[in-house]
Amino acid sequence: MYEKKNSDISISDQTINISVLGDGTVSSFYRTTPPTKNSTYDDPSKKQDESSIANRLRDALKAQLSYRIVPDYSTGNHKVKLVYEPNSQVISGIHAQTGEWLTVDGLSSTLSAKGITPIISSPLAAKQPNMTSKQARALAEKLLATDMKGVQLEIGAVDETTTETGKEVFNIQYMYNYRNGGTGAVLTIDKATGEFIHYSDVKSSLEVEEDDSNTEVKLTQKQALDKAIALVKEWVPSNAHKYAMPVNDGFHESYNDSYYFTFPRIVNGLTVAGDDISVSVDAKTGALVSLNVTSYDDVEWPAATDILTEQEATKLLKDELKLKLQYVNHPKVGNEQHYSLAYQPVFKEGSSAVIDAKTGEWLDAFGKATSDKPKIKHPTAEEELNYLIHAGILEVNETFNPDAAVTKEEALKVLLKSVTYMYYSSRYNEFELTDQSFTDITPDHALYSFVSHALKMGMLDASAKTFNPMTSLSNEELAKWVIGTLKLNKPAQLSDIYELNYSDAAQVDKELRGHVALAYAMGLLEAENNQLKPKSEVTYAQLAQVTIRLAHKMNEYQIDNY
Image (cartoon, rainbow, N blue to C red; front, side, top):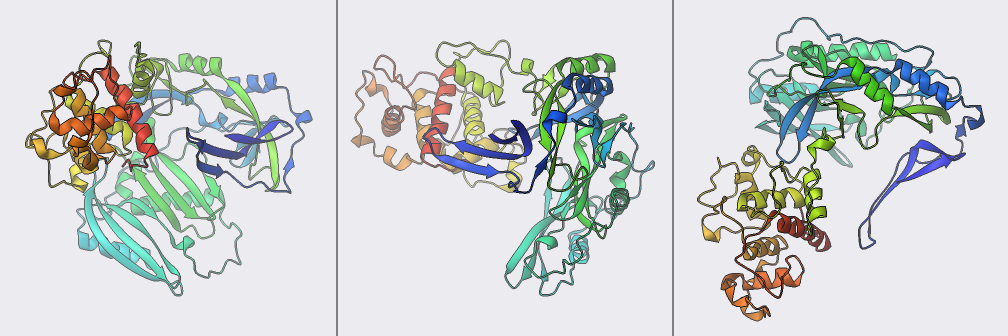
């Protein structure tokens, strides 16, 4: 990442991000806000002393207790942690010249103290209980109707499915067709209540002529918030009492001229990070632009007992507080082209300014603490093992032995979590069922989603009839898996054309001779003292090394990893 600077001070929204592969290929290039020639900047010589600003931040800093949803993307499961984080009012920082707080409304000499206030005090009735597919389609037709010239609404399929949080919903596919093409999206409605789970107004992105003569923002932020609250009550009434008024101030989106607000979930009097209702309203009319509900009900909410006190957590935050001086383009400070100097708080490096309330440890963006990631010592595979452990792919405990034999079940999970982007859960077969599997891996088996995907990729084939997940994986079987993943099964099946110049080559299964020859020749597996040891059990350490090598080969051969 490259940061643009002015007077050797970083400009927060002027960065270039480049990803380069190991062979020098540029795989991605991204620039944030394009630079403008007419930008103006605060004079850095007029900034206040950093130590006095730091003292002011420390005085205002306060730890706030909340729940945090911690997703496990490899399984689709979710956990809840009690955490402390800084009070939201201080996060935007302080103007370096005036010493005033940066708020959504501009500069302020004081901070507002916001409590947790429910949107409504008592539950409202569901919008349309036990909604049918026909009713969902009718609602969509009414909601999505448009009188835009030359635009025609087309309602497609109404699919009945289940969300990742366990709600039964209708996914309604729709398109706006017009002369130069069309734009579509999906409206998601809760089947039990007839209320929105996800809605986004895409009409503003249609490539048709519109009257844009009046672009001035008409609603104040307070008026827009009132509109957003009314829309929550209208479209998700039975959930409104579970959510609080925004803790963080909303903000104005200039690209579509809308106000965006987030209403956090309340459980046991605490807000829940990762569970909220987000609403965007048109800044001119107050009409609904988007609404999204992220709700988790089937989770365990830990009691706020045996945790750090607020004072202890605040001290941890203050001890790690540092300031970062940078230029920020604040819409309510100066004009659109002006960049203000701001001191902004940063905390422990590598963390997300979140502390585990029970252990006092700093958590990263994925909710993991340093103690959650044990360091494994190993003479040959230490780097690979620790990479897989820290990525959450390989789960270990204090009794873990990297030189122990790995079962087929565990090996398959490690490989697929490493080289594919999908996650694996019991819901996999709701979306895709394979017409072949092993007789001992039926659709209700916990390993079914892994096996199904591996069969589809070519990593496995069902010729053996049974998978035997709890048996150990041999070197020659692993060779077959990795060669299949690289789409080389057909050349590998020409077993007679390969020479195996190893002292124990005769021990290789005849049908796997080509797979073994290719796997070792490509460096995916390694011989030891001129021995293949084809029947030997694969260890966790060996699997970790092969997994990393396979990932590199898949990238080199441009093998799809989904």
